[in-house]
Amino acid sequence: MNLQSHLDALKGRHASLENKIAAEDSRPSPDNSILSRMKVEKLRLKEQIERLKTQ
Image (cartoon, rainbow, N blue to C red; front, side, top):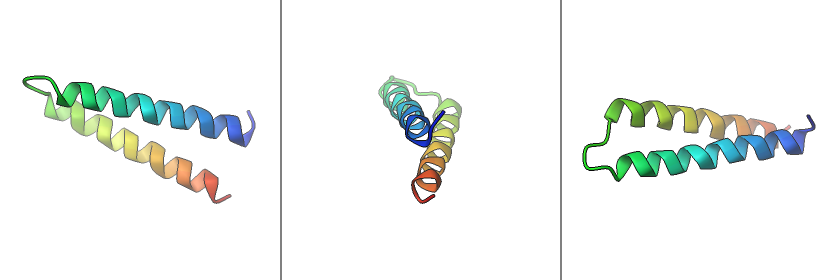
């Protein structure tokens, strides 16, 4: 997998998590533990994307 396709895959996962977070957050009683885990994963993906961009 080349760098650009890897970045694209990470960006896709990041966007998907963003949508899932928004959906969970808009529920009447969002599960804070799920939200927290998804936000940590989203941040991890963002950091990985930024690291790869600077290489």
